[in-house]
Image 1 (spheres, rainbow, N blue to C red):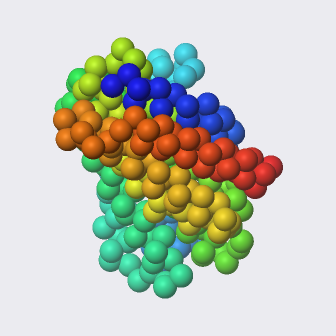
Image 2 (cartoon, one colour):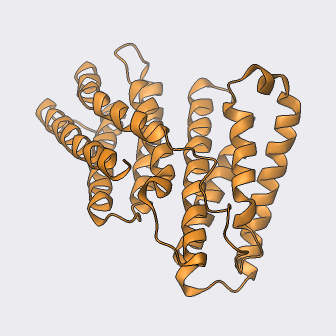
Length: 274
């Protein structure tokens, strides 16, 4: 497995570059709820930023004051999750304009993934499962922030701003970075397997969120996600003993492709978000 770890290290630098560039965008302040009128979906999106913020505060708070309020933060996060569960039901019962249907569908996909990870988090205590669930919570709250912003734009008929839209890409890219870094030369096969299963899910999420205002950037996202999916799929086959036809050259070429595609993605992202 050592040569597999080396191939991932080749791409790690560029993953770090994009993650650093994107993390500067505030995830819990999508801008969608600041001035938009109520949506036909009974003001669901108006409350999304607050719900996303409550969940992220419980899982990712860094300040001493925040950490002292863990019990209250947990209660607020639980209430926020209940809000999101109720939102999904309201969306199905409401008359949604055609211009918002695709965004609503994606919102529901992201919300259900978030609910699943949130519910599973206290039940799965092994390190790999905890990391997987926390990662999903991180990037799916980011994706919901992006969905929320797009719905606001559709409702107010305003142009989508790349920097605001890219909050979803922030979360997925950062989650990919964390999972890639888990693949060290000393990591057990179970950890590498878990990381690559997460990377497969993240690649799939990245593809369905390639709906930003730049067609070129969307295309690069899909290309990179496809390459990452192939790379992780091959890794899983090797771990399972089913990848005997996969050669070191195959993996090296994939690593080079990942590096090249991510460099192009990072360069364009920095330009568009400036």
